[in-house]
Image 1: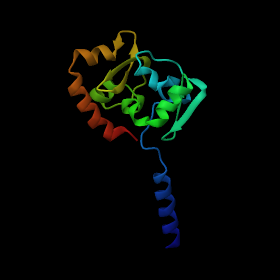
Image 2: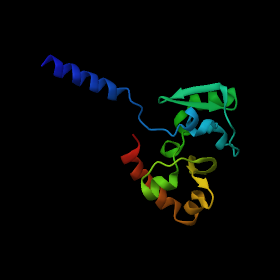
Image 3: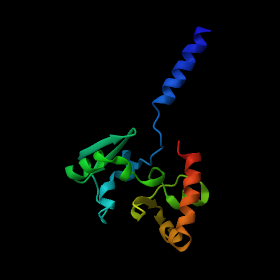
Length: 147
């Protein structure tokens, strides 16, 4: 009986500390090391190692101390949707697909990232379809696949 309680305690403890969202951390950082605050200023910038923080168990880089502090004051305002995976793929296929960090859209004050390689620019597909419907689909699919 004691063993069962110990196992249950360990399992509960492990899940209690798990990150809430599976972030796309190609290269060891969210958004491949791009500064998430910079997207909202209209020009994505690569972050620098000296301006790094960890949020929800994931490392984020920033181009400046000011951007780092802006993020730290309200991280949820700058987090990429769907953990930084391709918004179109989450909506249409319910899959986590890597992105091109320079292919993005700010929609209703939220950052959406997209896959873009060869003739497959999913941002173009997104814009040519119904983005609002795609957001609804992606939101539902993300609840199922986010961990």
